Length: 241
Image 1 (spheres, rainbow, N blue to C red):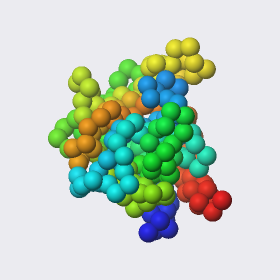
Image 2 (image 1 turned 180 degrees about the horizontal axis):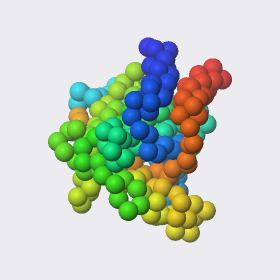
Image 3 (image 1 turned 90 degrees about the horizontal axis):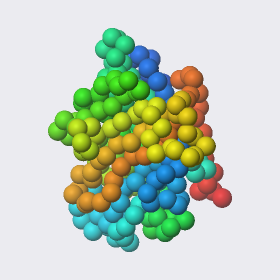
Image 4 (image 1 turned 135 degrees about the vertical axis):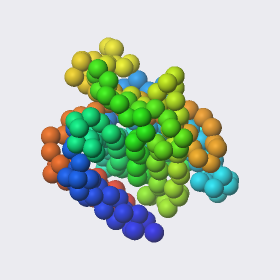
């Protein structure tokens, strides 16, 4: 099953190029951990507390444990991408897609414990996507915006959880060059895009569950496809080591 999951991640990465060619790609970036996450260290780009307490059906997860759970976009072998698409050819954003491979698990305060391993992330915003003065945002509309996180390696390999967005104020997602919480860091400049988004697990498990990341621009779809394949290759190398 682990091999098939890795192959699926490779296919998903390659398919992004096809998506880009069918729509106008307004922006794409590789994502990195935000330096000011409240649960760091380790630094992370995605937090889903209590993820390992239950499976997607809401049943107790064998060997699982509740608690702070984070996923790094910077770890060796990790590679997570954001893309902003215009699907209607009017030069206005219609869709934001976050996908790739992260490394994480239950946060032990500097390292990962229960669930440590690689995870495939696939999250899409299509409802209420809009352009702001400094980037893009989205707002919840039913369960339209959402995605999955799937364990590729580790104790829970093959488990997949679904989640949907939730509004904080009147928005569920922001991706803007506004220096959000970057003051005093080496990334504190107006050219850095910061993403933050709020979501909830569909199985009802509660806790702090959100995106918080910074973006590193990628110039071409060719580079995107290569980066996706390298991420999968990194997972395989780590498993073999």
